[in-house]
Image (cartoon, rainbow, N blue to C red; front, top):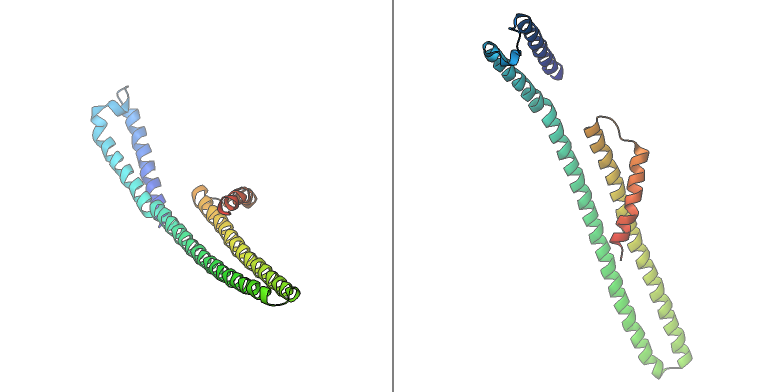
Length: 198
């Protein structure tokens, strides 16, 4: 289909050049564009060239650009949905961590009340055990949250690399320099992480 369109466009261009050359040989010594006898053929060739260019753009270029934009939008939406799901999972982990923290604090208060009633040495040992248990739970929860955040950021970096390569390849007509693209993403990633973490 593209070859036919290019062939038709090339044939029209060749005919236009041939007719322009013939008219220049027959010309009256002035600019052929201002010769009112040649206005009608010039308007015809203008219409043919416009229709040819319109056909090429509407059949080839615009659908390719539209398909690329739709694919890119679908990929971005899928990655955003995955990031939102990961964010919801992280919120669930934070809620579970806060519940465990509240339960452990309540248990610590209970132990403190028992401490006054029981032997101080035994109560101190139990309090230390609760403290160690709380510290271990906090450490595990923080590790899980950090791992979730790092997974989301790695996924976004891969998504940015893929989208950057696709867009560059579609717009430039050649594959992107992966090393330069990776370097740009690597320099942008710490800023994103720094801005997103609190």
